[in-house]
Image (tube, rainbow, N blue to C red; front, side, top):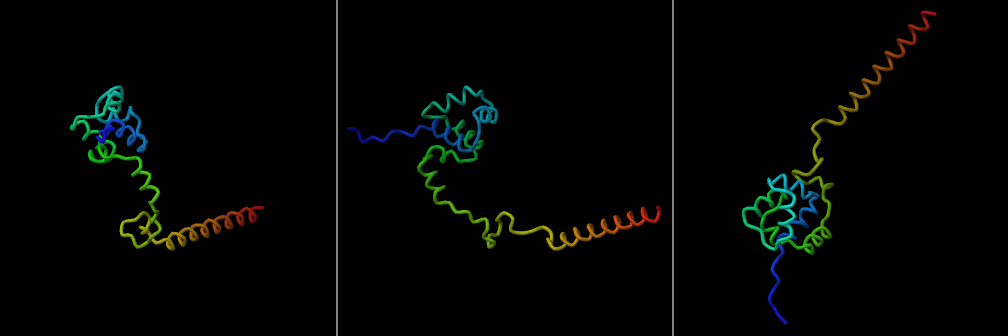
Length: 132
């Protein structure tokens, strides 16, 4: 029984990260300027040359080290422990924390337009009645 660790399969890691990111082989191939068959060959190989690994990592939005050390167990652990803090208004750069306009002003503007339209409608109907 051997205690040697099995080397990481870089190609399989690339494939898995690509799938998790929702990127097709064709899109990855086009982004790095190779054929889809070449991407398939890369994903089937245990080792990838450093330059190509950097290009692929850039397209996938990860670091080369992230590809080399990728583990599905780590990914699932991360997502199982992920909490959505988007409703936390104490975040400085969180999504939808600050309005770029005053919502009350927009409501007032809407009501003013509705009142104006109602007045125009009443005036139109009064003109029709006077014409008869």
